[in-house]
Length: 323
Image (cartoon, rainbow, N blue to C red; front, side):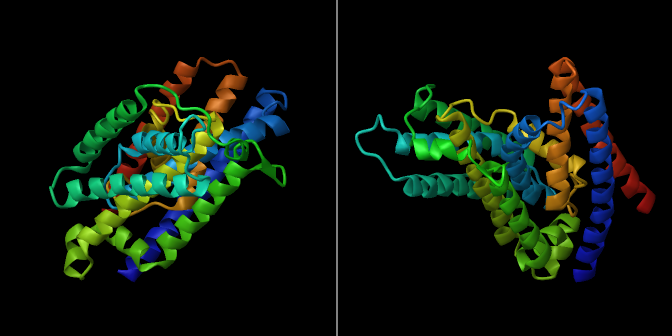
């Protein structure tokens, strides 16, 4: 099983090198096409800040896709986490929780949703697509219910300032994303849990026969997905300076795209944090460059959709050649 994991990591590194080359070529093209505007400090900072939140959600999706599953509820969890935090810290409430207490509660709620996904997938035997689609709908309705469909404002200024502050001229949100990516890399490459997830995605039956607990690892993958989505929700609440009922809508699609473009397979068993990070950067760079060049955003959305199809086709083609 260890040999299999090494093969996966080595193969994915080749994909990462190709992605880095594609990203650099795209950046050079946009630098010339926009007459340097793309490489301006303000634009790069804004691009990184925009990507950081989606990038954390993509890392959440990575854990589930490695197992051969999918989590359509990540965007709803982003909205729920941000709303719970805002409701607990809003100055409009008679009793306010501290920022730390609100963060802990919001993340625990997010993890609980993830565990619910794991329970539905493993114990109830509901296909991941259907289970997480149902959870996505339920959680989105829950957010609307507890907020009455209204924005919740009045969260602490110190927390709001976090999203606009920099360290070494790099937004704090980006530093948080980098820390999350490093932690995910360590977990997937160097822990038993990470190796088990790859084994589960490669061959579930073989993983079971080798003594790997399917329940524990399914629960773990979806719980981590909920946790990271919850962190992204708190990051978004900081940037929006409010809990917004519709926050996080569509984030699951960008997350899937980032993971797939980053070299992971929807059938499971492959994928890395670095590839996912580059995939998220590619998607946001395309959008950013499209805006700078005056390209219709709907056309850009169509282009990204075609890129996703091409990435999945390439993955299936490579597997067929090897297999």
